[in-house]
Length: 222
Ligand SMILES: [Zn+2]
Image (cartoon, rainbow, N blue to C red; front, side, top):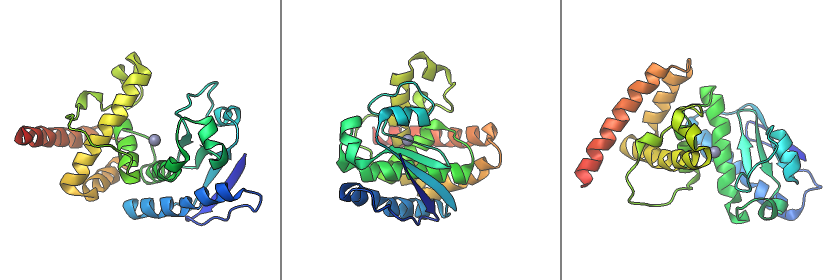
C-alpha cells in the first residue's frame, strides 16, 4: 500500500511508482481543481491510499468481502483506491475510467469537508457523478421513490444491492435536473444551510420544492 499526502491539492509521487501508475495519478491534480472550483473551498489535508490487493483494500474499508465493481471508497480524510497498474485485474472497470473515478472520489472528500456528514445518499452520489461526467443519457423519468436519505431507509434494506443502484441512478438524474434548472448555487446554498446540523427540516423543505419542480417540468415535457 502506498500513501500520498495531499496538502491543498499539492502532492509528490514517489520515484518507486511505475510510469503507468504515475501517469494516471497525475490526474489527481485535475480532480482536485474541478472540485475546488465546484465547492469554492480548499481541503487543507487528506490522503490517497493506493492498494495492490483486494484483501488490503477490504481491511481498509472494514469489510470481509467487497464486490469487483467497488474500486474506491472515500470519506473526508482519505480516498482508498486500487493502484492503476492492478486496476483492470482487481476491479470490473477499465483503466480509461480512472480519471473520472478519481474526480468522483475527490467529490466525496470535498462533500465531507464542506458539509461535515454524509447525507443524503442520492445527492452525494448524484453530485459526484455529475461533476465527474459519469452519467449516461436516458429518456426515463426520475423516480423519486428511490432517493434515499440514509442507508437505513426501508427500501434500501429490502433489496440492498438493487435499491442502492437505483438510488445512485435516480440521484444522478435528479441532481442533473437541479443543476440544469438553477446552476450549482441552488445546491451549494442548500448544503450551506444543511451543514450546520444534519437538519431534516431543511432537507425536507428543499426536497419538497425540487420534487414539485420536477413534476411541473415532466408534465411540460409530455
Ligand atoms: Zn461514490
